[in-house]
Length: 104
Image (cartoon, rainbow, N blue to C red; front, side, top):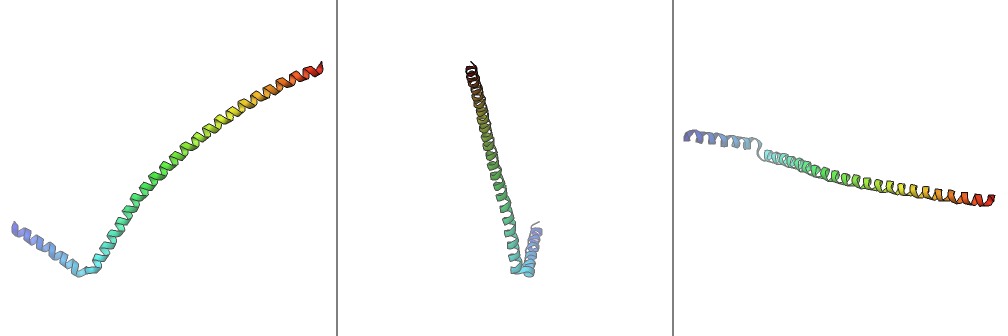
């Protein structure tokens, strides 16, 4: 059993030595570059998710704010309509009185 483990470990190290002999420093540099690219992509994906969440939050807040503004505008329009109707009725009532006084 122990002899098998020693043989397996020798096979694994000799394989890595052969790998180093074939690829050497070039392989190490390419592997490091590949690792950096993978980390860069993952970092950008995480950052993109954070940015997307932030943008969604801003849009939701903006949507709620615009809804409040529209509600306030509608309330102001209703108040103006009531005030104009009241003013119109007052002017009509005043005109009727003046017309009747002129007729007499």
